[in-house]
Image (tube, rainbow, N blue to C red; front, top):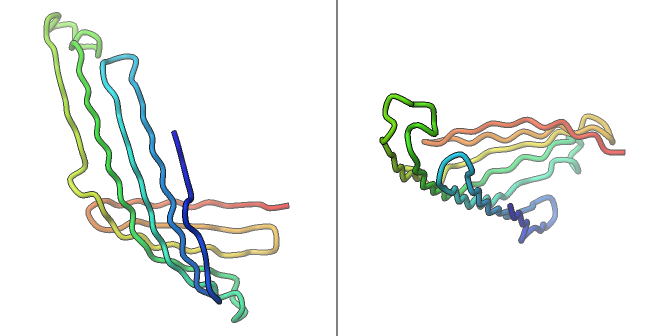
Length: 132
């Protein structure tokens, strides 16, 4: 896997960033590979100077996931068809979805970060960060 944050900056309380990752997985149980590219541009605002220890942002997530899988049915646990083979090509039906996120500073050492994706592809995560 290769992950790169290749653009980040800010002006005043505004900030923006773009991160990207590329993952290639070669499977061992069946013949196949999975390639994934994810790019997420975001723009946000830091309310800390107004007395609120919170940052919020909006953005979008682009995902390009392609997988090609093939093998015999016996190798995946279907012994009734000993000579049966399969081949599957998969990709996402939509590449882009909007995202919304926030980071809240509980105290100087503890942060809570959350981000959600909307649209045809949904996602959600929460992270608790302790800094010392």
